[in-house]
Length: 92
Image 1 (cartoon, rainbow, N blue to C red):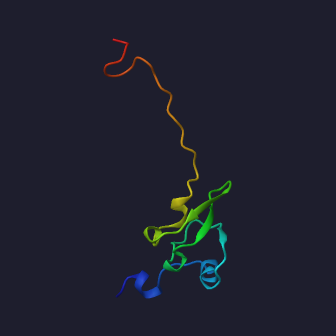
Image 2 (cartoon, helix red, strand yellow):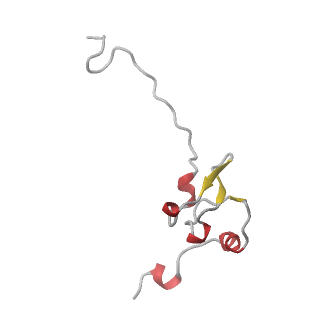
Image 3 (cartoon, rainbow, N blue to C red):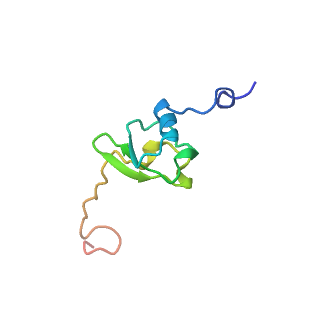
């Protein structure tokens, strides 16, 4: 018995199927779960990260990945720097 992905086809949301047909300049994507189809290559989309839409240019390397991978939902924090700790520090 073939695998489910072969039998049913790949998952694509209905709004992405509509985006394939019309070539708009920049389109907002609210769902982060669908994979990026090859028809969206060389387009610019805005992927919602939970707070604001993030602009993303679709290239061939991004095809097949989930759209949420390219709009980070969490901020990167810098860790506090501790002086005099660790190897070769002043605290010896």
